[in-house]
Amino acid sequence: MARKRGRRVAPSSDHHETGAKTSTRPDQFSESAASDRKLITIFIVFFVVIPAVSVLVYRIKYAPNKDSSYPQFQEDGLVKTDVDYQEILDENSKVLKNESHRHYTYPVLAYITPWNSKGYEMAKRFTNKFTILSPVWYDLKSQGTGLVLEGRHNADMGWISELRRNGNALVLPRVVLEAFPKELLKKKKLRDKAIDLIISECKEMEYDGIVLESWSRWAAYGILHDPEMRNKALQFIKQLGHAMHSVSSSRNGKQYLQLVYVIGPPYSEKLQPHDFGPEDLQSLSDDVDGFSFMTYDFSSPHNPGPNAPLKWIRFTLQILLGNSGARALANKIFLGINFYGNDFVISEGSEGGGAITGREYLSLLEKHKPELQWEKNSGEHFFLYVDDEHINHAVFYPSLMSISIRLEEARLQGVGISIWEIGQGLDYFFNLL
Image 1 (spheres, rainbow, N blue to C red):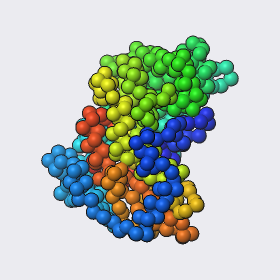
Image 2 (image 1 turned 90 degrees about the horizontal axis):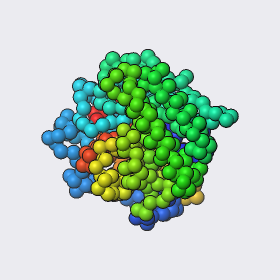
Image 3 (image 1 turned 180 degrees about the vertical axis):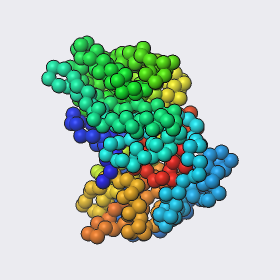
Image 4 (image 1 turned 45 degrees about the horizontal axis):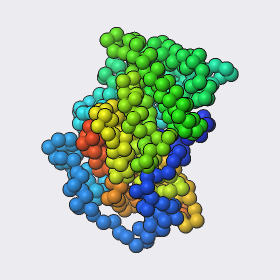
């Protein structure tokens, strides 16, 4: 199974890669996704009773404009709700002749993971479609009474050199802050050391900055419920950003080191202490260059369903950009789009399954020849199948249609996008970018 984007929700070093969430889903989604038993019942009814239905109204409403984004795909009729499994098998490897032309003109951040080598190849092939490339390489950990930055062994300088020969995308490796938060945030010496380690690594390796992930881990430790510690957490991010902005890039002396910060979506209209909200966004805006907003992982094996319902994405953006001050910062948001999918077990009395890559998705299509269905409320395709042990499954995986309507939503909101992660998608997804 694929390892997908994840929030660090427990003090373990297991990678992203997603785990359980730190809070419950929004109240307005509780009726449709309140329990896995209810979802199982719904899916079984779909599986036994309901044939695939063409959702013409939805398709007309959300299809990209013919004169703007994807002319070749529009001509070929590939961006649609009534897609056939054989069409995906036949077309998924085909890309437009001009692989460097950008259709999505807002910023694009793409994650690459060491455990999925295809991502490195996609980054080189489509490098001009990306604004920022973030290889998932580093962890900043506690070691005795000090700190250590681990991950340089992952760094591939030959790959970075090739990227820079062929395009202008910034390389910002991801750093996960695993150090014990109470010690780090309370001790000035450790805070200064963490910042020094990060900046020194950027200088030595000639990175353009970093993507920092810490908020979900701090939430898991419970420190964000303490107002004093929460304030210290925000002050540390500000201090790091200020320090990075004081250092010129090794490659371009006119540009300072960049800081992108990873944030999770709020799960309730009434923000909880561990939620990152509009006031936090405004507080950090001067010292952080962008915010990678993880709008995926809505469902899990315990509550199977769509990966990132469109209405939920809108809801989370509305909460984050709710006031006028935060709304002005929309251009700093990278809206999360998943290139992975999920294969959930939905048989009565059973649960399980998890993330799948494009390769695994194509294998399922080839083996089961399923009838794909368009779920209009979530804006996602899914299909159902029975495995060799007679267990029912529901598979949600991105499609050209689901991605295109999310790109259109991002355009309407004036935000960029972040992709987790580009090695898990199908080749023709990149035609949309």
